[in-house]
Length: 142
Image (cartoon, rainbow, N blue to C red):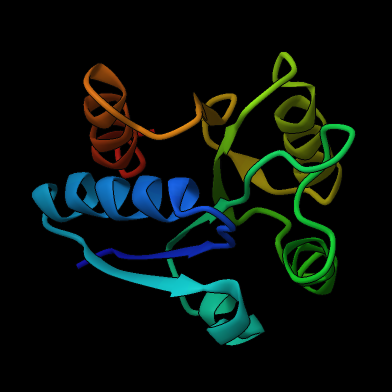
């Protein structure tokens, strides 16, 4: 059975909602899934998973959260080469530049980044809920 760890940071709950919806999709595919707030996550949670999904909202001038998520991402940079990584997050403004930058950063670390990341404006509602579940369903297919 594949193991998928979802590690996220959420300020308003939107990215946390995305993480839980994505987890539903992963579970439908029969994988073992763990959802962890980044404050509870360790490097082993990345090393010991077949797929790692990282979530952060856009902050400030379109960057990932800088106090916990950014340092965590930096801490795993030396061993994600070849690791299957998916990225997701919510935003309230901008055009997704933060996600494009995050995808490039992970690719520069050598990660096998799944698709181009999933972004949702504000809370995942309506069809965006299904987009999150589909993201989870697809992480084992690529």
